Length: 285
Image (cartoon, rainbow, N blue to C red; front, side, top):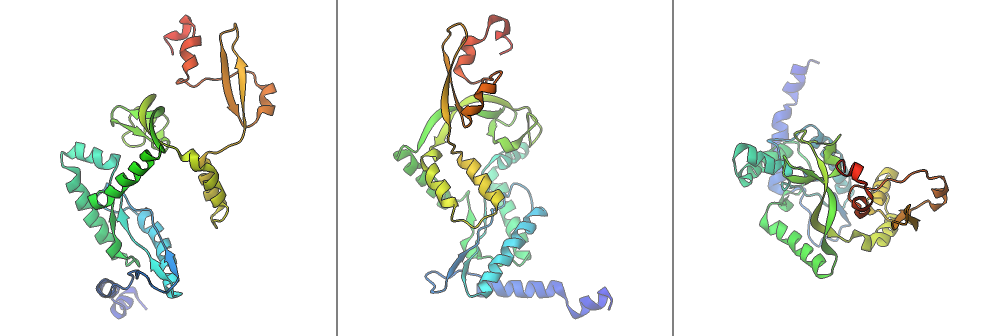
């Protein structure tokens, strides 16, 4: 049978449009509030509508979650599988500066096209629960959550070393810096202390680690979460500076290995750097 005959017998393009329209009109994949059925929540990482359209990696990941959602739906679960768009961030800002177009305009255009493309894949998505992080009705709750953290002393301002990119005019995450340059644009990035808001994640470190034990997740994912939480057990060891110039407190998880230490490195932001640097090397520092 030739490809032409297959297309004649099964007009895929028409069939796709027919059933996609049916699913949307009938709200086939809409989750039901207060349903007696067992619940199942499938949440994707929302795409960033910083470009004009999706790339090939988007449907790859969303196809996997769509399989899970449909499987659970077929098993009789009340499946909640929403979709959204996370448009705040550096790409949208830089595009606005480059084109001179307000980010609200470009973001909305991109979201509309992203939605059209996602619907064309026929995913089992509850579009009535679409989320857009740039919607004031959405981010007002982000602001509300921050205020709750602030009122409970879980948010505070502090000087922290950050990756500062003067060309982009913003702070970058470690993942956005490659060999000392920004991933976007290849601009120089410098470490510098800046005053910023900090959240006391460590207040919940023990609880977060304990609740990881009940998750059926891959070991690699669990390890990433543990590293992010950052809780460790160790000891503070005090070293006396040569010449009676004070002391240096060091935290280590392996104090038993310190007998083999031959030298120590201070981070550029450490307050002792300015005190113990000799005149000979001060200009370099």
